[in-house]
Image (tube, rainbow, N blue to C red):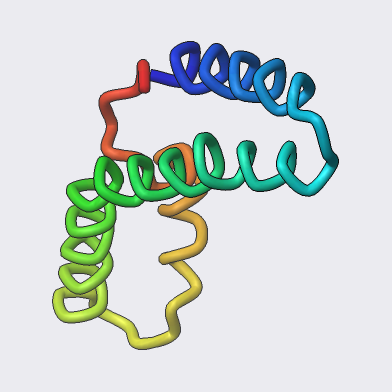
Length: 88
């Protein structure tokens, strides 16, 4: 998915560069690239956010000590809290 996003950014930058004014170029970039990609990444990341939140809730309720020092180590050990799938 990242390669498609980078390719789309490249295409929109070239489109924005051909606009007659700088303001039109900025608006083209924002409305054809930044806004749609931010919505797309927000929507596709919903499942990962829910899984991460459930994993954190499970750790805090079932954890033996309430110190919380183990949570940061666990987050770093699993690669920073992805969905475990990779290849996004």
